Every structure is written in structure tokens, then in C-alpha cells.
Length: 116
Image 1 (cartoon, rainbow, N blue to C red):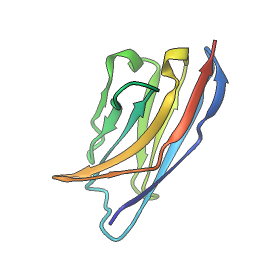
Image 2 (image 1 turned 30 degrees about the horizontal axis):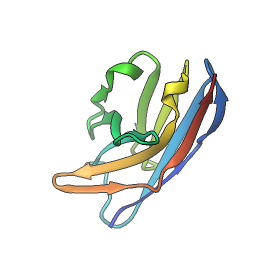
Image 3 (image 1 turned 135 degrees about the vertical axis):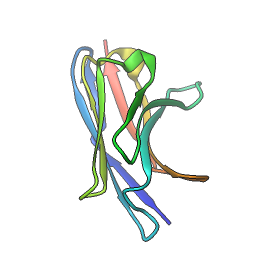
Image 4 (image 1 turned 180 degrees about the vertical axis):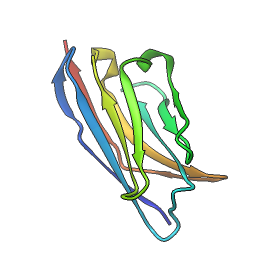
């Protein structure tokens, strides 16, 4: 099994920054896992924000390109999401995700609220 614990959410004004972190643990986890961040706003479906492969290749949802940066630390089994120039539409619960083949794991989520 894999456990994912997010931290770093909170309330920020538009234009501000937040950094989310996710710590992975469990006997099944390794640096071979891809990792990512998803978000779910009220009344909307969960959507991909960014992913990073085991080799470090990244992928971003169009609306966050140039504002968000995903990174990982394979020594400490963590993934981070640096969010700059935040907008009210970025308000959502952000979920950490880890995947390998058909195995997918989720964290419990952390709230990000951006005020206008």
C-alpha cells in the first residue's frame, strides 16, 4: 500500500503564492511511481493540475502553465506544487496522486482558497 499526506494549503489573496507538499510512504512505494496533483472545485469534477514522471518529465493543465511548477524529491519521497500568481478560479481541494501501471493512490486533499 501507499499512503499520501498533503500539506501546505490555506487562504491567500489573488496574485499570491502557495506551496503544496505531499509525502509518500508505504512498502509499495518507490521512485518508479509517477506523481501528480489534481484539484476539485465545488460542483465540478476532479481535474488534473500537473504530473511528474519517475524520470522527471512534467505535464501541466493549460490554465496553470507558467504559474505552477511541480517537482519531486526521490530521496525523501515527496512531491511539491509551487503555485504562483494564484487566481480565484484556482480555489479547490487539491489532491496528491501517485500511480504505477494500474495502481493509483490518492491523498485526502488540502484546501486552497484564493480570495479576490
